[in-house]
Length: 139
Image (cartoon, rainbow, N blue to C red; front, top):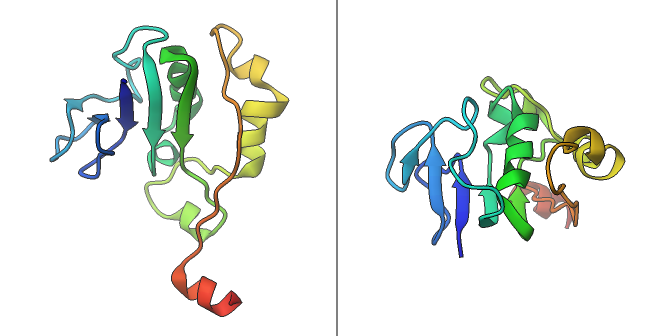
């Protein structure tokens, strides 16, 4: 199985190939995916994982297209971010993702975003994570 962790930093997912534009422990390939296509052939990747990466790059739609390009048919793509709080506006974040954005890419206009690519993103679910303090407050 070939799994890639985009923007992994020092917290690469076990068993995955870690790509980041900065060298760190756990980074297997120093590579700037915001400037170049992913270094994998079409249809060769089983799973793509990314956490707290896409909101930091200007060309997230192009990177999403490339994620689809390298994925095998039925490949799993576990993509975070979801920002529905003021955290989205912290310095370093250049793009905001919420249900509307993901629905736009995956449900409403996939032919616009993935027209030249064999495939698309399928939106299976949103997974919400709340802070322990919020959880305790809500009971």
